[in-house]
Amino acid sequence: MRIGKFGFLNNFLPYYWLEKQGYKTIEANPREMAKMLGETIDFAPVPSFHFLLNKKELRSYDFCIASKGEAKSVLVVSRNKNLNDGSIALTSQSLTSINLLKIILRERGLKNRLVLLNKGKASELLQHCNQALVIGDEAIKARMIYKVVMDLGEEWYEMTGYPMVFGISASLKNFDASKANELILKSIDWGFKNLNEVVKAAENRFKMPKEFLEDYFKTLTYKMSGKERKGLEIFEVLCNEHGLL
Image (cartoon, rainbow, N blue to C red; front, side):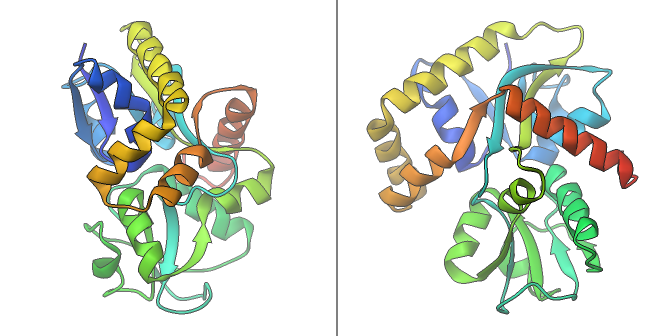
């Protein structure tokens, strides 16, 4: 089975044991992954927005990438101190986060102009606008340099009281990837039981502080429960209300 993963730190713990056992995975950013599912990949996390847009053709599973509060790696950053009404440059790597940002801004009555650019680095995006939406490892790096004016996971939780599901595992409707889902869930359980080993390996690979890595892995949720499903349901409702789906 061809298994995909986001090429970000947020997928490191879920796949660590799996890859240690010799399973091969294919890395891509969320937008790329959405295009690859069903063509070069059988099972993978895909952006939640993509899943909702195509759910008649897709089957979902229990593995997800979600946050109950701060996401820490889905951020609007700025050279200024606070979110202002200026334009926000959007990374081309994202689908869910862009639409989540649109919902948050509209619900808050903000009128920021959004500028989609074919770039992923905060430094490149901030050359065009005073504020930028960045995701994944680039967001983690950016928070060390620039002012975080919005953590989208935190904003969503404050607005709804439910987790934000950024990615959900999926396959095409006619393909049963239950075995891959079970392996990932087993890998997640192993990862948290052996967190010190996972953190040490992540520290070597990503060159990030141990304390941050421990906190980051504990911040994220990797399994769909009733609250995650409700959060995804609310996201779908708001996407429809704001004409995004």
